[in-house]
View 1 (cartoon, rainbow, N blue to C red):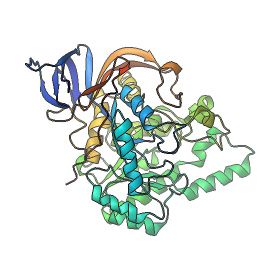
View 2 (cartoon, rainbow, N blue to C red):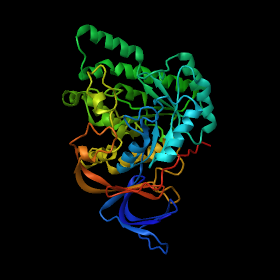
View 3 (cartoon, one colour):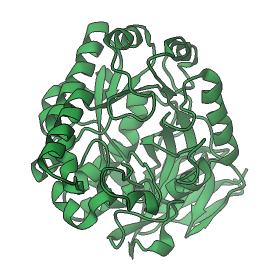
View 4 (cartoon, one colour):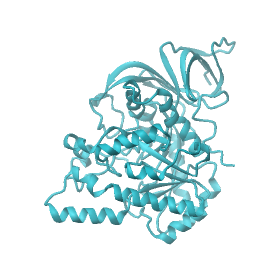
Length: 446
């Protein structure tokens, strides 16, 4: 296995940015120092003027395999991920068939081992009927990222809203439970009221149908269950100012039993953007009014919100061109999320150290990922080198299988120069090395 010595780079890690060298041997970070001279036969990379970050860990993606591979697959989306500095991902169970059995869960891991350039983990899915299969996941608490519950906004039979089943899962799960929280009864009521008032619904109606109340009521329900049973709960893609009163920054992240995530599109777009982007930014939970975006940023910076993720959810261009009521919900974002956040660094909205904390450190801490998410000696060498070199998203440089992005035409001040996964240089200056695939994430849950 090749070794690497990254010289004269700015290492951004654990709240500080310092100049130094990093030695990579046997897939791990061997040494970090101001200057390293080594007798090992390694490839030297000049990091002058560049920033070395721990690879991004995206805790919420939809890579559409199996069954929905006309939209995306694990190979194409993991490749887009590493080009964007994402070295590990956790993928959701709403595939076809949904990940409702241990056999289907392990089948996904097999696909990942054969096709993913990034490291991977997969959530176990829940339905109203598969409680026994879900609880078998307790036996895999060190090699499965968690259990996913759609407490609203689901497709097929993924919706779980039976109180008895929810109590059963929350009381017996030994793993982290991740929830999509939107109250289905409120959504249906809002939709019916709008349909009675107007002939045709349009994209700007989306945040009215999936409003703040729907999000708050469902998140509050999940938190009440978690508090009742002392369950480890992680609420995905918080999108409203109202929900923020449910979360605290009084404890360090490692001691929290209830954690939260915000996604890049809720930090970037507002309901004003439906006028120009329409269905391209239709997603669940909905992108809402500007005051929500402002509140999300405040909560991110003061640590009420713990993690930044993408909820990468590609659909074909044709699926997005349908009338609003039929257009599929979800955005492709995994290739551009880090660059979008670094754009906000350049604008003074957030520090680079805080971006690293929320996209790498906090994810590793929240999910108790073993030996990843930090630039530390002995840890796996999941690393990304970035440089100041402006570029613009065009159709030609989009790597998603769906071939489009809601950020088309956006210019970024930084771009990814190199991405290391387990010490392998899988992406460098626009080229990929696909000889070695990523690894199954391991968790240190005791």
